[in-house]
Image: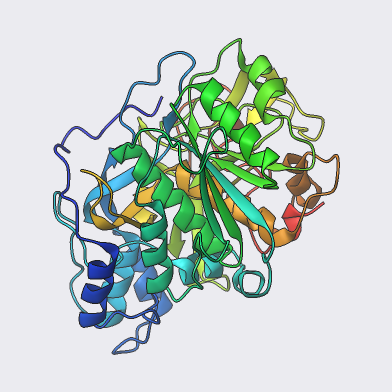
Length: 449
């Protein structure tokens, strides 16, 4: 899984300088910590004009972890934008009355080209909760391999957006191996470093008061990644995000009981990035499977609109009926007798992607825009954190089902991620559907229980 690159993309972008140099460059360019994505603009422009311009977003992408996920292994679900114009760039151009800039392959960007914290908090009704909640909660990120620049890149992202410092010294950030060691870490990997930066930045954007625990597996095998999940829970995390996946197999029920069955703990997993089709661990009955949407500005009361993310026949949110995992009691759709993917969703379309800072290795270019369900999984884990500690003995994947059809979720009713024999497996509709589940967050009330 996660092995398809767009055919016209080749090569790598160069690494930018240190976090400090990048911060200095931003300051010289007039972009300080207060320079949020939607800062004051030079002239008035209608919401409809912005929405029309944003609809023109079109990008090219490269797989962050472009390796074949052989049996028993996973690949990350992150897509890095390598060319084109994002929704954020179209929006900025519209409000400034200028032609949009273009992302060019092999070129670094001095400022963000994707959605930032204020955009995401606005889109999902989280601004009030993000300001007041999350203190004392720990969101864990599980990924493979080491990102040597994780702490420094996290600091740059948070400084740019005016978020409080989250460092090892102040106890907010901690990085460990799958055995809990802070010194004996896995080998470094440029592609997974980009995934790690995406995950850390999405937690920061959604729950800026949360502590962050990064647990690095020594490889992308399901056993090592699963061991890292267990370590995250052992270290006290009540919210664990998994932005990776691989093909389903008959071993999945064993992985379920060994690694993903943690009562009283939120476990989220990306639904996948290759369009219609089920993958694991999103197929586990014990996780919250997170699908992906295209998120755009709109001239509506909400101010945003969403549809199923589907770029092409080989790029879009995953969904489907599991071939192996049992159906949890709280899923009541009748077309799939086993576990149905997804439960909920959030932004994942690279064209409407999120801002990420990554400076490690050949893929580390400073400011990037990322998409994929690797963005939506940590975002949803962080929404759970804003909602508060899950009740003892609960499986939090069921929490949103209690709010199905209410204003606590934005029902996504348009778009498809492929062809399927049972329509709702791959096509959005009113109520539950595979690609977007029950919908996207509108505040935190659908994520508590």
